[in-house]
Image (cartoon, rainbow, N blue to C red):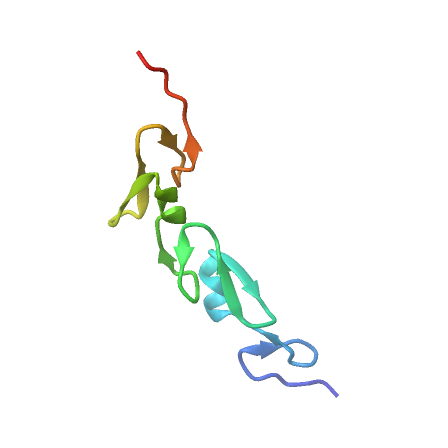
Amino acid sequence: GKCMCRSPFFGNKCQLRACKDDCNGNGACNSKNGKCRCSVGWAGPSCAVKVCPRECSLHGDCDQQTKECHCHAGWAGSDCSVQTFEQKP
C-alpha cells in the first residue's frame, strides 16, 4: 500500500518534512528536519525577514529601513566584504 502523509510530512514513507512557506524562495529547505537554511540577506524560520547581508561584514553601517549596507571608506560590495585599494593623493 501507499502511505498517506500528514502535513508537513511527505515522501514514500512520510520520512521527509516540508519547510514552512517553502522558505519563501529565500533559502534552501532541509527536508530531513524541515528547517530552512536562509540565503545571505534573509533570516527567520521561513527566510521571510530581510536583513543586512552578513551584518555588513563589520565594515559598514546597516540602513534599518532598506536593510542595505553603507560601506565604510575602503570597503565595497553588497555586504562590504570587498576591500578596495583607494589611491592616496
